[in-house]
Image 1 (tube, helix red, strand yellow):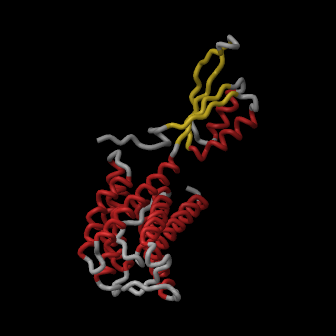
Image 2 (cartoon, rainbow, N blue to C red; image 1 turned 90 degrees about the vertical axis):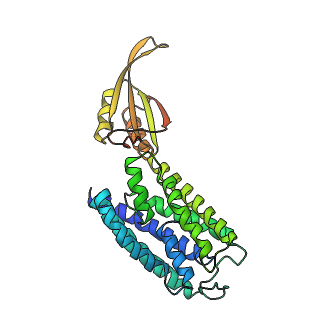
Image 3 (cartoon, one colour; image 1 turned 180 degrees about the vertical axis):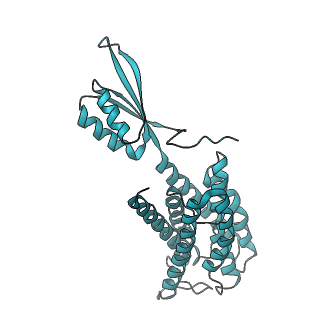
Length: 300
């Protein structure tokens, strides 16, 4: 990877971590909702100690242990980004919490955090916080990183089995959220809010991941198929040439088949338009593409 690609990856990871920290610290903690993952464990400790042990301390301590597992199973590249993510997320959570303590003019909860949306808007806070968490985790995963905790376990399972990361995290996180009943702030309403947060977060996560990995298929018919194929191949995308026969024209012609990421569609259309504006092009969505250059085949 070039330095610019590394910079791009870490910039998106950082933005994703900031989204997660804002959602968790500004909307989840003030309303005493327990989310999943290690951040959820941090929230449980935070509530149990009445705010004496900040969530980021627990988050950092547990992840330090889990990162040892990540090095062995997911490799140094994943681990380096995960270490960066854990440290940055801990820092962002601390910064957000310090800023919240300076906010005035809002009602406070028992941990002295301001309730920004009003005391009766717990569900709205749950939705906003969960959406920000899901988008944040999704951006981090798209760049090959992790926010640590149950993400690490989910990423390991996803590496070997065709199970989405969101589904795996739901299974791992239900127990954490259910444990909120045993904290001083636990009640049935907060428990249901926690489950809603879990579902919204993981649904958003899967949406972000799938949107970033969607593939498309091109069928291109052109007399200048050789130039088009060479130009597309230059951008490291494979091209298959099929023999076709035009029933209307009664002429033999070549058909190019190209599979690419959705984000590469504009580049391919630019190539076609530049070489042969009169080319016949069909673009369609593909449910899944597996093999070299795309996703790996994962079976039980």
